[in-house]
Length: 255
Ligand code: PXP
Image 1 (cartoon, rainbow, N blue to C red):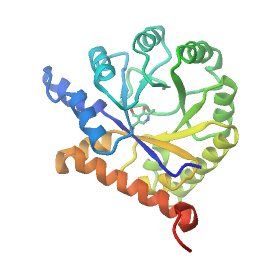
Image 2: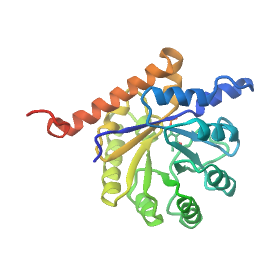
Image 3: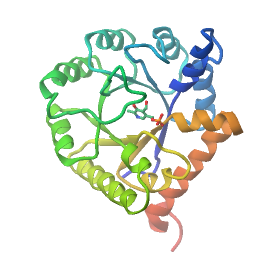
Image 4: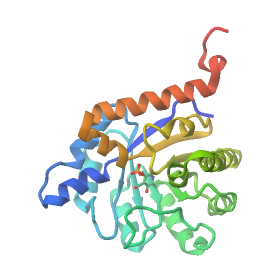
């Protein structure tokens, strides 16, 4: 159970805007530094095979300038493994990747890809990089992640965010139960994908989740209110939901 819920800011879509004009503005590294001054506990960047947003040089520059942890999202390919081993970020989150997808559409198939993933987990861990697997909040995927020996899983919150009404409750219950299962197995549990101001509260209230990774919504919201304000508001919604969930005794207040 974690009192402080960490916030990782995904800066990919600052690079999307930059790449729309082919130049160097806006700079995702500048956004990362501003995020770290605005309440982010970490920065996440996804180096995709097609380099549609983050590029190799962004990863090098992030490693050189960040004072908070970098979480590199990558597919399990030999090219990405080499890049990760060269830069040695604090963490790597292994994600599935399909060229034709607009975003990471689902979690990894940790069961079907067990033999493919195992050497990546081994090599990255041996280099001292904390490895997580991005999976759907399903018991059999968690069990496969546990058997691969990763210290962290990140639960895909996309289905929860996309759902409405009673279906959203069903999706939330899956995340609650997967997070409890992960903690029981000794794994640190993260969550992310599609989170926004109106969906973050119930996820932040799940006490066994230690970190949320949020990108697209906050970069979009930055257009209207600025990045610092968007991050600070997200931070306060997360902290408020976590404090209410833990209750006055755990918050250290007088009864
Ligand atoms: N976590 C992982 C593993 C992701 O792949 C992404 C999207 O790149 C995110 C979190 C953030 O999702 P979003 O940009 O929808 O907030």
